[in-house]
Image 1 (cartoon, helix red, strand yellow):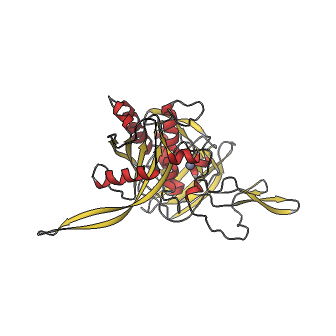
Image 2 (cartoon, rainbow, N blue to C red):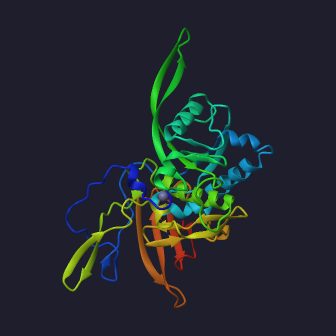
Image 3 (cartoon, rainbow, N blue to C red):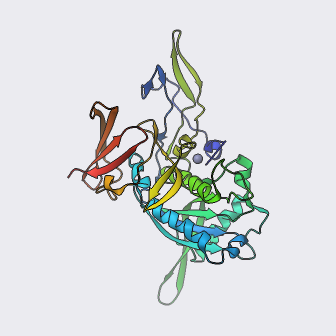
Length: 356
Ligand SMILES: [Zn+2]
């Protein structure tokens, strides 16, 4: 989700123990809220499928508008932007392909598309074989053309959003003399990115910059909280603050936030595969602040692509050259390799590398 509203609008209320939580991040006599894991899936190695939905895409005559968004997804999914999500059990992914749905039944310019219509379109494209079936790793990014509004985003004041839905997927097996069709219930993870032209805008960004900024937000959230029920989000309803009279609770303004929401205002330039993009930083639940890699691959040696999630992790702080405290994270991946994360100077850069 994005901007102004919290994404918990689409998830059931969480239960929480009614005792004061154990000490987590003690910071200036207050226990800060935190993004935590609630079970269920994450997307360890995402495959992004772009879907260009709406009649306006017919005017993308040379395909440049689609090319740059496809290249962005290709560059970002293979970059440190994904490897930085290691603490959430997520690593690098890739771009799978794209589909253009711009026929007469797709949204015309100056119309508003309903969420159910988007979901039905995705299901139809998947059943029809024009998009690959979900496999637990695929994330479908629906890009709307200029002057098409998304009802869900209008209703919530979002610049984009991510959700999931379930569909029945037919499968046919040939028994030699007859064919037999059975159905599986597939959970489809998707994001919707309206075009800034004719819709709400982020101050100071051009249209492409807003599309990549919002896409990075939804990408980081969707891979860490794909079904909006389990996954990583902040389920603390209250912040506990220590005063001379004791502890008291105040409502947590971040309740329901996912990692993209925590980093929503941290807009930065990020180099992925040699191209500079406008993205958000990423919230580190462990560190308690937003981080971004330099995008310099030299810091990303032997990054884990198969070791997630870690079976054991531990961390400790160290100090280099009398500078600010640095943090090292170490872990053993499910592939048995030993990994270390080297996070230097808040907001500067970090990298994963294997020790052995
Ligand atoms: Zn969000």
